[in-house]
Image (cartoon, rainbow, N blue to C red):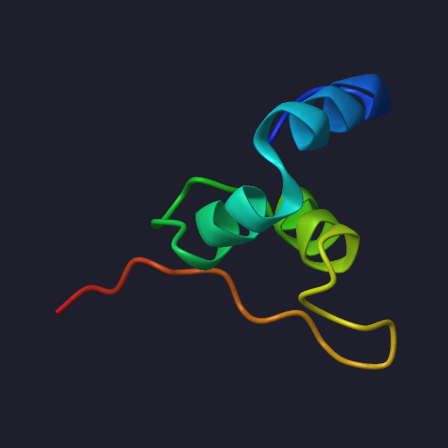
Length: 63
């Protein structure tokens, strides 16, 4: 979900289904998504609307 082109996106959605991809995204661990993919998938899967901010991705915390 972090690399590929639009055709790869279509194939992934067809094979996995949107519900499974939503689960993957909402349970993502630190570093699994770059910022661009994190934002894209939130909008693509309906987890964010254009009038609202995308949630902050998981971040590593020290100390």
